[in-house]
Every structure is written in structure tokens, then in C-alpha cells.
Image (cartoon, rainbow, N blue to C red; front, side):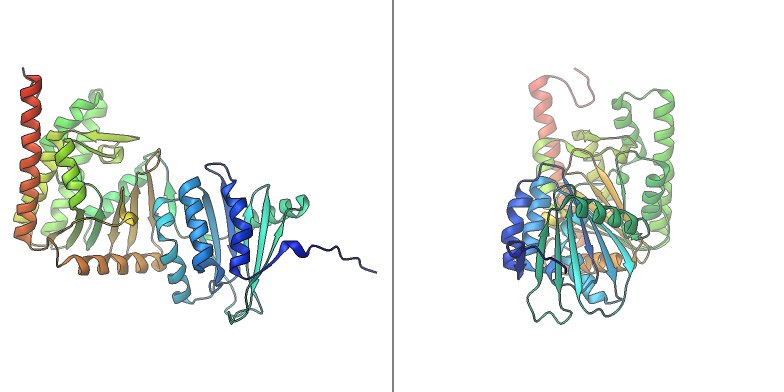
Length: 398
């Protein structure tokens, strides 16, 4: 006769009970902990439930929780769109890594497995109709945790990564992704909480390179690589490809006020972060103005501020081709790359809505140029004050 042990205290009915029991477990995790989530169906409601998603997003943000999310997709693009919309911020930061496998279009029940390695598994079951409350069980039995973790690792090996996340090892792969974005025919949309050194003149780029302490060979190949990029960018614009870029007025004002700009080192083909000095920032702003005056298909929109979703990162969308996100709010910058249509569609729709909403802001070409000139004027005034205070000019002459 089978003997069943009583574990009624571990069974939770409804999302609220699940969240209340899950909160102390997640709040007790150390910084940089990891968690794995498996969804047997993309229509499971718990994942996008407001209380559950708020708790998970808060944990990801505050604990720097690293999450691997694996989803059995049914072909319901609306269901995937809802998940991506809710979790877009950790996707952009690279803290949530998304993989998919192909599943059945209909199941008797749908499951979500949330695994905290070595600590607990939360098993959630819900009906496809979504009318009944989900039922969840919290499990901490050691052998069960080991086996379900092994099962997850085996399954994710065969899942299709929707995102590729590159760390601070800037290989040729990353350089070629950037080259494809700016230097091959096709429309490009950019949302940038920064300014782009790609628009500097070659001499200004070399001037800043010279301050970075490279030996002769390192300096020479970086300079040559920039000229290759610059030539490709100019040819792409001459060919009629439309570039649309959204900049933050708040960030531009900060650059003018502080007299420098912190950005990922990848723009200067190096690791870590680079502090672009005032002269370099001025050269970038002048570059934007030159392109706006010379290329009608180069379009810039300046928003008073951009949302926290875009803070300290740059989205670059090569239409119908790929998406690249440079993110630098953590200790090391990362690049996120995807050529999956389900992501491209969501990010493109977001950009288009942002562009449409901003058309009532600083939108005309003349007003954008005037705004950039005013930022440049303030930046140069700050440089002038610094020279008077130190007795040393911007080029180092006393």
C-alpha cells in the first residue's frame, strides 16, 4: 500500500500565495545568484502575473540575479510578445537569457519550474484556460533538486538561444556586428543614452587614441580600423540608407556640464570603459551636426529624457536583420546580439512607438542642429573655464 506524507503547507493556491511564500526565499539570495525557469507553454499566466513579475524583476535588479529562461513555444506570437514586453528590461541588461524549444500547441496543463540551484524548486501548474487559480508546490528535497537541475541542463543544451551575450572580450565577431550595423546597406534605428564616436572625424579619433597609451602597432591598427568603419558608414549613407537615432537631452546636458563622457571601450577597440574627454565629446557633437547638414537620410530625435529601460545602454536595430544592445550599467560592458524575428519585431515596434511619441519634442532638423550647437557651446565654455583655472589649454599647452 502506498504511503503518502502530509505536505499541505508546501502547496500554494493562487499567485498571491505563491508570491508571499517566494518572497523570503528570493530576498535571502546572495548578490549575483542564479535561477533557472522553464515554461512548458508560452501561454502560462504566472510568468506575466503582475505580482509575480514585479517580485522577480525586483530580485533581478536588486540582487543582480542571473536568470536562464527556457520556453516551449507554441507559435502564439502574442503570448511571446507579452513575456518579452514584461521582461524587456532584464533582457536588455543581459541578466535574463532567453532560449526556446518547440512544444505542443495544446496541453492538458501548463507548468512553470523555477529552480534556485541547491536551495529549492517551485513547481507551478495551471490550466490552459486560465480560469482556475494556479497551484504551486515548493520543494527542497535534495535528490529531487539535483535531478531536476540535471534535467534542465540537458534540455537547455538543445534549446535555441534567442540572445547571444558577449562579455568584455571584444573579438572580431563584435567588431563585425558593429560593421554590419553601420556600414552595410539597410535602414538602422538607434536609441542611445550617450553619443556615438563613429561620427568623429578621423583626425579627432586619432587624437584621442594617442592619449590612451597604445604602442605604435596598437595605435596603427585601431586607427586603420576606424577609417574602415568610417568609410563604410559614409558609403552606406551616400547609398540612401535611412539612419534614425534617438538621443537623451538629459545625457547631453550632463556631458556639457561634466566635460567628459563615459562609454564602453568597444568604440575605441579596447576593454572596460573609456572616459572621452571634452575635446573628444566636442568632436562627436560636431560630427552629428556635419552629418545632419550633409545627409538628409540621417535623422536625429532628441527627447527630454529617455526611460529607465534605455538608461546606460544603446539599442541598434538593423531592420529585418538583427538587433544589438551595448549595455554598460554593470561592472563590465556587455553586448547582446540577436537575429531572431520574435525579438526584432518587439524591439522594432518599441522603437517606432518611441519615435512617433517624440516627434512632438525636439524633432525638426533645424531645431536638432540648434540644440546640438547649444550643447557644444556650453561644453566649450566649460573647457575655456578649465583652461583659465589651470593655465593649461585643451591641447596641453601652457
